[in-house]
Image (cartoon, rainbow, N blue to C red; front, side, top):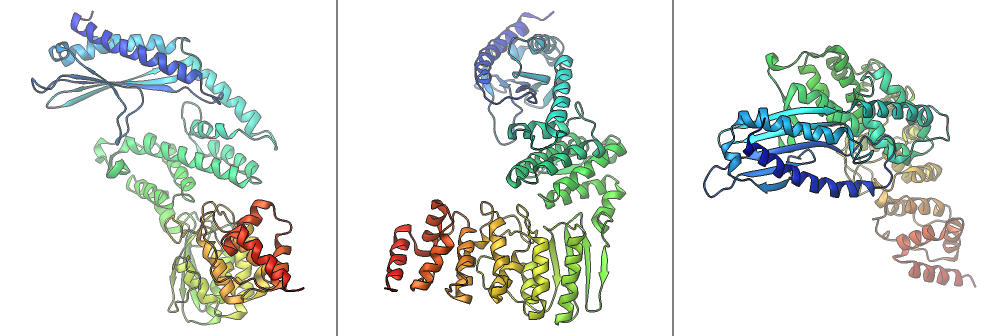
Length: 544
């Protein structure tokens, strides 16, 4: 039985909790789009009890209803009375906390707050702070009936939304929770053979809808990272560094034994994360090696085994690692034959399914660059600019571009930034500057480039005009280049559409475009739609 001081403390905190929960109940009831996969919002509660260290500093109670972040604090606070200072840790732990847990559990198991207020689990935390130490006690609550209902809803979702043939697709609102349910051992076996078929099925169904597919991949990778950090690494290491993004492994005798199945799933997650976050993948594999994984060590040195790790030609040598998405090329002699061998090597890898968004490590004496100001001076850029010096290689470079181009993918040659480019960019840009024969290739590129997330193409129009000038034959391609630019692109410098033939060519290129795209082209070419229309009218009048 609690003493009076403990009971007073409990009542004080309970009154605060009830007032907050009533407001949260109304807020959650008004939320739209909470589907059957939503497990419940309120799943955490922490009481921090801070005893006074001095006569002028009052004792404090902090109530957290969401797990605190390292860089923010949204706790509800109360000034505690002297009873907190009088209570021993033993009373708080063995009298106060059990009664607190009992009250919360009764509320948690009830149906008083609706289907989406509580989930099937809740973590209760009590933190006792004194001048010399901080003690933390944790317990978990579970509602087995709610868990069973969520399992049934998840199974129904998989049957009706995942496995069912197109055009049936899950709602975008379900992506977040379905991805996290796949990474929840309470709901799904944490085995690649169980999770991957479901992930792959959704990817296949969404292939015709690239933007929708990108959103699902983002949700899945995000869920994978949560599992890796919170369910795996936090068991074997302590977070360190800024925002706790790095981890330092616990000593060997303080780490629990890792089950082979758990390591296998961690490695699966590292590979799934890799295409989007190669640095994170490398970090995870490095940790796995430190934890004794021979498979992780093989991934780092040899790749998955699907591709030959090393290649030796007569004039160049190469190496690749599909797990790390790296290719190495060493040019033995700066001559056409060496670059032909290298291009054949790259094309062969892509035909076999090597990731398009690779990073190239190049050893070459020649250093050529394309005259496009917005391109990063990376090794990939250098390689294709070098290869473009040999006219006989241009058809092979075009073959490479066709194999490489893929919307919503980016080379790994630079850190994710405004200079990140779609695979095939350097080849396409270079070919478009050397010959009209590759104008159709440039137009195809501009039709699929992700102008929302890439802007390196914004300066290509100026390079194109500087190389080819304004021509009737080149006008459709110039318009395509302008339309492929990002929303932040500025007007193109040096444009002179000042003859009837050029004006007519521009009008023909714009004839099938909707109004908003016509306006965008006129702005990029002339600085404003009004000025563009005036220039076109004047140019057309010169014919009469």
